[in-house]
Amino acid sequence: MDRIRITGGQRLNGTIPISGAKNATLPLMIASLLTDQTLILENVPRLADVGLLQRILGNHGVDIMVSGKRPGETAYDGQTLHISAANVIDTTAPYELVSRMRASFWVIAPLVARMGEARVSMPGGCAIGTRPVDLLIMALNDLGAEIEIDRGYVIARARKGLTGGSISFPKVTVGGTHTAIMAASLARGTTVIENAAREPEIADVADCLNKMGAKISGAGTARIVVEGVPRLNGARHRVLPDRIETGTYAMAVAMTGGDLLLENARAELLQAALNVLCQAGVEVTVTNAGVRVARNGAGLSPVEVATAPFPGFPTDLQAQLMALMTCAQGTSQIRETIFENRFMHVQELVRLGARIRLDGERATIEGVERLKGAPVMATDLRASVSLVIAALAAEGETMVNRVYHLDRGFERLEDKLSACGAAIERISG
Ligand code: EPU
Image (cartoon, rainbow, N blue to C red):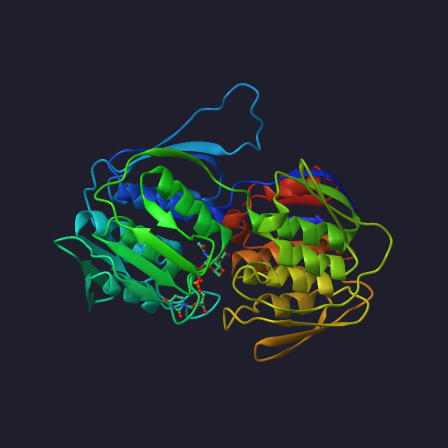
């Protein structure tokens, strides 16, 4: 199993290219199941989760071709996928695959909408909480799908197709909103989705579906209207930049000090997080090339933050912010309101010398002068990267174990950081 060795104390200076967003790429790839024509996705990041979803879609009979490199392209340019679901050979998504990546449950929506039936394993528990799928099932049910739960599988049937309806989410859910939009796109009649998630990745997927011939309005707001169409076509779409990768490197340079240009990043995708960094005393400048984040000399001020659905502070940056606040000059408070158990990084940060108290959904972080390197590990993607951020500023050496979590969501993390001065290397085996 690969590990990452970091020797802390180096400032970060230079440019980091931001990759395409993982959490847009996954639903965009799944949306390819809605049409028998080819969907071309550009700026797709090279991530383990993308590879795994390729396998899962392959199991349904989807062909995926990856374009070769064009002259002038760098190692950091995203890949272009040509995805064809002309022949769907299997409408079952088995436990072995769905349990490895929760988002693959979302195939249920295009499969039932286009094929009239889907049999998808329930994903099961995961490291950041119970994460049920009841609201995704509710949405399909509201569009007329018959739902049966049988031996760990959700079976959704709509032999005569889905019908438009009204879906009102009692809680904001990203996966529920993706599922509802995809299913409603091929339903007969109009669907109104209330209390929809407003995350930029929802708007990106809706934008791609509209290029495919769907009629979706209001994506990016809490009320989305979808007028169903009988069929969708192929299209070409460029995945938007990853706001969580952007925020992660912004926190990294805030931690170490230095000056980074986060190339291709779009500030409006993570305004809440950038505001928190400004409050902490970090310099943030928006340029034509991306977002520049710098901290030179001054200490970090503590902050009080609660995670919230977009446009609030993202839960996917909570662990990284906590790592940063371990070295603030004072006491910070962070509340996690989205997932009930997303604090696995806390005990690992404590191993590095952080002072953190947990009380239910609230973490109180008392800033310390300096962290000290130690062996650490984490059980999810964002928790792992928070340990990398802490290690970049810690005295001495930190070994981050279970690197496969990082590979799920950060493209060439150690290359991007070492090019900007970090002492970081991967140790294979
Ligand atoms: N929820 C329910 N019932 C449901 C669905 C969700 O109770 O049927 C609850 C969840 O348990 C959670 C809340 O609703 O408490 C929000 O969950 P949501 O459905 O929004 O999360 P998701 O769609 O499963 C996506 C991202 C996550 C990100 C969350 C929140 C993808 C592939 N995943 O998950 O990303 O944390 O939205 O923004 O888009 C990550 O990238 O590391 C990651 C975990």
